[in-house]
Figure 1 (cartoon, rainbow, N blue to C red):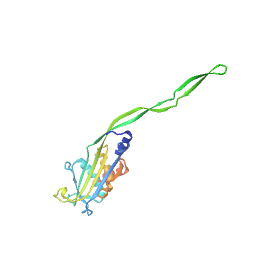
Figure 2: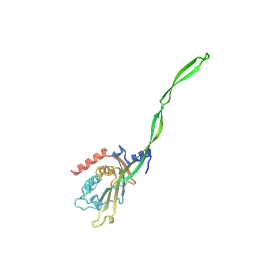
Figure 3: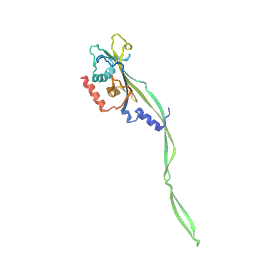
Figure 4: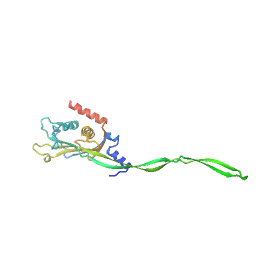
Length: 240
């Protein structure tokens, strides 16, 4: 893909790839409720990924963020595995999408500013010759002398989290259980580091989890936002 320099700047800003933009995360939340009558708020926490066990260290770390949010919404995790709700937790990062671009920058140089000295000779009525020296300075101005062409590329990743609450029925597959609500969280940017981004995405999505947004909500939040710092502290306190 070939992109003109001024268009490229707008695209990089939108993707969060500028020097300052890398610190801002754009998070989209799409949450929908299937059944308004939730049968209590006790739940069992399960992996929604066939290849990832609940014992996986990353799964356990990421789970703590969203279990803290659910607790703030009145949900309680079952310790005996018996609960009316099963919440399936999934997350991941898509393969990076790389875009090639070309920038074209005009090159200017200063011209002018030269001093020209010349002599005018004239004769008067008596035939006497008179010489006059004059000086002219040409104006200084910029002139286009060429174009500089550069190429480069940037890569973006889509990070995602899905929480799906089911009416729990032992012995049934997830597809056989009625869905109570589902929250999808996505974010696109230059980093694939889920450990760094998961608390940011969770903090941005916290008000909308297990609720019906009615539309996709977009939250822009910086990694060092006070809301993120406060959220991390709540998670730490919740672990004590």
